[in-house]
Length: 43
Length: 288
Picture (cartoon, one colour):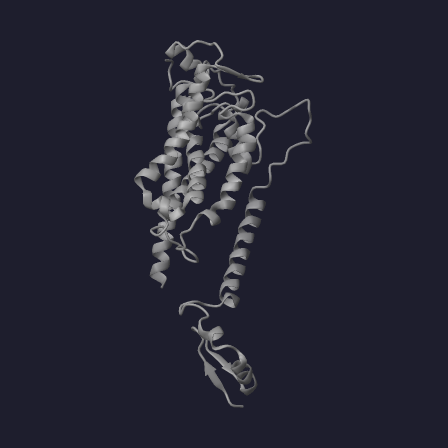
């Protein structure tokens, strides 16, 4: 198998997409959880 | 003027004699419950807030327009097509999908599934919690599922906006954007071709349906495709029966179909990136 790191950067793109999607998902969920906590505090 | 006060829910209403007579005509049950104790009126409480939010958003947009005007270019000419030709940013997710999927799938089927899926959400979600307030703890599956889909969509847009350059090649921030990337040495192969060679299957057609010649390897790829959905439908049904019972037959199947289709998108992308598989399933009409 040829070098996955070389152009067209298949491994790099794969890792970028997995990590990026995971981080964004965590960010969105974290935002919802934060809003929930913040609104409960207001009550 | 004689005044009397009633307290339907949390609202204190002052009424005079005339409306008192009217009030007597109204059924008692109609006044019994107006809302929970801690609710406030839409006007002016909510509408004022919305107005302020709208003005604030408008001010930010105006500032952005002045600071960074729309990148309008010269009149389009068929002699000098720009390279790369990029769609507006909000469509770049779709354009990026075209790298990994059959054009009919990336341009028609997937956007339609996304839109129909979003429209269906209120009908297939039986959870009454989280109406009018933010909650993660009471609707974990919905929030995780939606956040994942949204994140996937945004990552595709990020890739399209910042990582695609000349010839729609991938450019890291440290690559020179003016130099063409070398011609790719990767040869993408359909899954059925890989199966044919690794399992030593014959190319003789098993069946012919018009222009669709079905080989044994092609049948196996159908099995893999249908099996993905079958296993995906079966696992929550067998392990989380409560999830199925809450949703019911129709809503469960719709939810799982859309959820598995959404999960299938990154899976297909990785099959192409890391296993050099062009299409999992090949037919004369569409490829997946």
